Amino acid sequence: MEYFETIKCEDKEIFNLDFHNSRIARTIGKNIDLNEYIYPLNSKLLKCRVTYNDDEILDVSYTEYKKREIRSFKLVFDDEIEYSKKYLDRRNIDKLYNQKDSADEIIIIKNGLVTDTSIANIAVYDGENWLTPKNPLLHGTSRQRHLKLQNIIEKDLTVDDLKSSKKIALMNAMIDFDILVDYSILHL
Image (cartoon, rainbow, N blue to C red):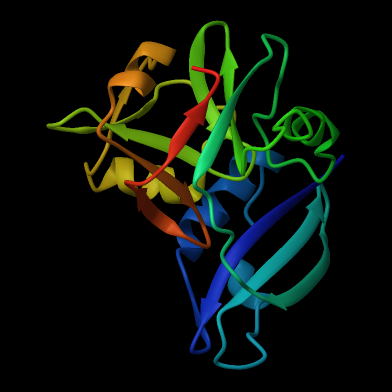
């Protein structure tokens, strides 16, 4: 089995490495210090991709990062989807993403509850608190950091919670906590 980490690098700084190291340890059951493998090539905003398996680091690559603009979501329902580790094989996620039709991104609903998008964890603002799914598909590094900082609260989120939310935020290693105010959810 192969896995990967996506790590933000900018101005030759490596972001949130402790959370990435922790996820690798949870994934393969041993500690690997990514600091020994990541050397940002320049000062640009880079997406560092570290591919690994149960035994070793297989590859480290860098690409310049450009944020995707996301303004619309389509709900997709799949009660069988499983992505508890950051698997290199994303065919099941890609299959759901391909159902997005004219939307920019999907929100995956599993067993009647909101989980994640295809590229990020999600949080909704209820007017008082930022809430994130108690059972996401993947425990993302930005999500874990914001939970630790107590910026977000875990809760089972339903489609009705999405409907009544004031704002949505997407969280991943590259965008951190990106608040969307002007968005639509198709087919609600």
